Image (cartoon, rainbow, N blue to C red):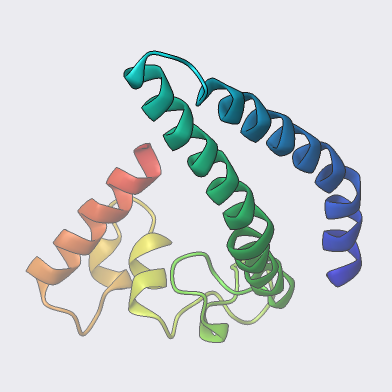
Length: 135
Protein backbone atom coordinates (compact mmCIF):
# COMPACT_ATOMS: atom_id res chain seq x y z
CA UNK A 1 0.00 0.00 0.00
CA UNK A 2 2.69 2.50 0.97
CA UNK A 3 4.66 1.80 -2.19
CA UNK A 4 1.67 2.54 -4.44
CA UNK A 5 0.90 5.75 -2.61
CA UNK A 6 4.54 6.82 -2.71
CA UNK A 7 4.71 6.08 -6.44
CA UNK A 8 1.55 8.09 -7.12
CA UNK A 9 2.77 11.02 -5.06
CA UNK A 10 6.19 10.82 -6.68
CA UNK A 11 4.63 11.16 -10.12
CA UNK A 12 2.23 13.98 -9.23
CA UNK A 13 3.70 15.93 -6.33
CA UNK A 14 6.20 17.94 -8.36
CA UNK A 15 3.63 19.15 -10.89
CA UNK A 16 1.15 19.96 -8.11
CA UNK A 17 3.84 21.93 -6.28
CA UNK A 18 4.86 23.88 -9.39
CA UNK A 19 1.27 24.71 -10.22
CA UNK A 20 0.57 25.84 -6.68
CA UNK A 21 3.66 28.02 -6.55
CA UNK A 22 2.88 29.70 -9.85
CA UNK A 23 -0.75 30.27 -8.87
CA UNK A 24 0.22 31.75 -5.51
CA UNK A 25 2.83 33.96 -7.23
CA UNK A 26 0.32 35.14 -9.85
CA UNK A 27 -2.29 35.96 -7.25
CA UNK A 28 0.40 37.59 -5.12
CA UNK A 29 1.26 39.88 -8.01
CA UNK A 30 -2.44 40.60 -8.41
CA UNK A 31 -2.44 41.92 -4.84
CA UNK A 32 -0.36 44.86 -6.10
CA UNK A 33 -3.20 46.12 -8.29
CA UNK A 34 -4.89 49.44 -7.78
CA UNK A 35 -8.48 48.23 -7.54
CA UNK A 36 -9.37 47.15 -3.99
CA UNK A 37 -11.73 44.40 -5.18
CA UNK A 38 -8.99 42.84 -7.30
CA UNK A 39 -6.49 43.06 -4.43
CA UNK A 40 -8.90 41.40 -2.00
CA UNK A 41 -9.78 38.69 -4.46
CA UNK A 42 -6.13 37.96 -5.26
CA UNK A 43 -5.18 37.87 -1.58
CA UNK A 44 -8.03 35.50 -0.81
CA UNK A 45 -7.26 33.30 -3.81
CA UNK A 46 -3.54 33.10 -2.97
CA UNK A 47 -4.31 31.99 0.58
CA UNK A 48 -6.97 29.55 -0.62
CA UNK A 49 -4.65 27.93 -3.18
CA UNK A 50 -1.87 27.58 -0.60
CA UNK A 51 -4.27 26.13 1.98
CA UNK A 52 -5.67 23.71 -0.59
CA UNK A 53 -2.15 22.54 -1.43
CA UNK A 54 -1.39 21.88 2.24
CA UNK A 55 -4.70 20.08 2.61
CA UNK A 56 -4.05 17.88 -0.43
CA UNK A 57 -0.55 16.80 0.61
CA UNK A 58 -1.49 16.12 4.24
CA UNK A 59 -5.12 15.30 5.04
CA UNK A 60 -6.17 13.94 1.65
CA UNK A 61 -3.15 11.63 1.40
CA UNK A 62 -3.83 10.33 4.91
CA UNK A 63 -7.48 9.62 4.11
CA UNK A 64 -6.44 7.98 0.86
CA UNK A 65 -4.07 5.68 2.78
CA UNK A 66 -6.84 4.77 5.25
CA UNK A 67 -9.22 3.99 2.38
CA UNK A 68 -6.57 1.87 0.66
CA UNK A 69 -6.04 -0.07 3.88
CA UNK A 70 -9.82 -0.59 4.12
CA UNK A 71 -9.88 -1.87 0.55
CA UNK A 72 -7.01 -4.30 1.17
CA UNK A 73 -8.75 -5.96 4.12
CA UNK A 74 -11.99 -6.11 2.15
CA UNK A 75 -14.04 -3.94 4.50
CA UNK A 76 -17.27 -2.53 3.16
CA UNK A 77 -17.65 1.09 2.14
CA UNK A 78 -20.66 1.61 4.40
CA UNK A 79 -18.99 1.48 7.81
CA UNK A 80 -15.31 0.50 7.31
CA UNK A 81 -15.61 -2.30 9.84
CA UNK A 82 -13.91 -5.65 9.42
CA UNK A 83 -17.27 -7.36 10.07
CA UNK A 84 -18.42 -5.96 6.75
CA UNK A 85 -16.10 -7.66 4.31
CA UNK A 86 -17.22 -7.33 0.76
CA UNK A 87 -19.60 -9.92 -0.59
CA UNK A 88 -17.10 -11.19 -3.16
CA UNK A 89 -15.05 -12.80 -0.38
CA UNK A 90 -16.23 -16.29 0.49
CA UNK A 91 -17.90 -16.88 3.83
CA UNK A 92 -18.69 -13.30 4.84
CA UNK A 93 -21.16 -10.98 3.21
CA UNK A 94 -21.55 -8.34 5.88
CA UNK A 95 -24.30 -10.26 7.64
CA UNK A 96 -23.14 -8.93 11.01
CA UNK A 97 -23.73 -5.30 10.11
CA UNK A 98 -27.21 -3.81 9.86
CA UNK A 99 -26.01 -1.15 7.43
CA UNK A 100 -24.54 -3.79 5.14
CA UNK A 101 -27.66 -5.96 5.32
CA UNK A 102 -29.78 -3.01 4.21
CA UNK A 103 -27.32 -1.79 1.58
CA UNK A 104 -26.79 -5.23 0.06
CA UNK A 105 -30.42 -6.35 0.14
CA UNK A 106 -31.87 -7.10 -3.27
CA UNK A 107 -34.97 -5.13 -4.20
CA UNK A 108 -38.03 -6.54 -2.44
CA UNK A 109 -36.02 -8.40 0.18
CA UNK A 110 -35.55 -5.58 2.67
CA UNK A 111 -37.51 -7.44 5.37
CA UNK A 112 -35.30 -10.52 5.31
CA UNK A 113 -32.17 -8.37 5.23
CA UNK A 114 -33.16 -6.36 8.29
CA UNK A 115 -34.57 -8.94 10.69
CA UNK A 116 -34.60 -7.63 14.24
CA UNK A 117 -34.98 -4.03 13.09
CA UNK A 118 -38.26 -2.16 13.19
CA UNK A 119 -39.90 -1.80 9.82
CA UNK A 120 -39.87 2.00 9.91
CA UNK A 121 -36.14 2.00 10.76
CA UNK A 122 -35.42 -0.44 7.96
CA UNK A 123 -37.50 1.56 5.50
CA UNK A 124 -35.65 4.78 6.35
CA UNK A 125 -32.28 3.04 5.98
CA UNK A 126 -33.32 1.44 2.70
CA UNK A 127 -34.53 4.78 1.30
CA UNK A 128 -31.25 6.46 2.26
CA UNK A 129 -29.24 3.68 0.69
CA UNK A 130 -31.19 3.82 -2.56
CA UNK A 131 -30.92 7.63 -2.69
CA UNK A 132 -27.15 7.38 -2.29
CA UNK A 133 -26.96 4.66 -4.93
CA UNK A 134 -28.91 6.81 -7.41
CA UNK A 135 -26.64 9.84 -6.99
